[in-house]
Length: 346
View 1 (tube, helix red, strand yellow):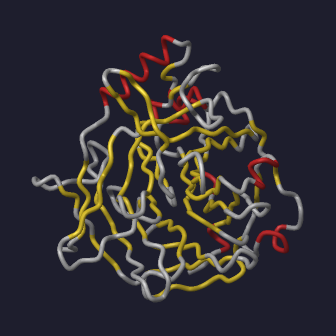
View 2 (cartoon, rainbow, N blue to C red; view 1 turned 90 degrees about the vertical axis):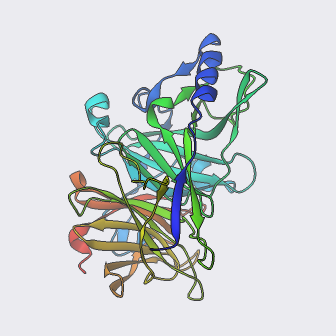
């Protein structure tokens, strides 16, 4: 036994339904991710400069945000996932990337739908729904959001020491102009439907849920969680089996989801992807130095130095593109970028 576990909380169904009713009465309401992805107000910009010199030796294509997002000193990009194999393509026509951001001061955390085909993107504020004396509302979700996974109908957000927060992608809500709800400039919000709280036995150090990925290497997918840590800290990776029926971490009769643990992670890892049993890790070096990608198995990784822009974050495998995708976080050095798997041998 690992001594670590996740325990799912009750759903915020009543709070979300009340919020939907209030927003609908004002001309907004529930629209879902597919409809929101048709309404992306911001333009994604391709980077045409020489990629190796500017972005890293392994970057094959890169896109950047509009200038206000590119230089924003409050909002920082962190996580990345894709809608591939979720059913979104059938609704929307093609798949999209989704990134997460955290706010250093005001705002909490948010996600962005990134449509490479249309070269558009838009932000959605992540919120906790509330219901006080029958009055619906919400507050910003204040987490680092260092990793995200879209699997089935749910978007899972890493919450460091707290565990994982989970939202239903059908719950994206439009907040009408002039609303009294404070959205920090966002036209859409996504309420958290439930949480998966991290727990640990006595004598076992609490797991830091720094980043997430979906591992489809075996017959049934698993949720792979990793820790960011220095050489003096734990750098564990935890694998949670997923229930194929519900699409969520499988729980025992006592309600706990218990992972398999490997403690041979790489210092300063920011993201992980797993393909056919091989791990790919991003590692940051500094604000000004390009990052590395590690490929292989725990205890036997090969490092590809100068592979990414400075400040690489989370990582996702998008099989339809043949690429691993990531984001970089530092102001004026922010890209959504791809690296071909064939260029990253283990």
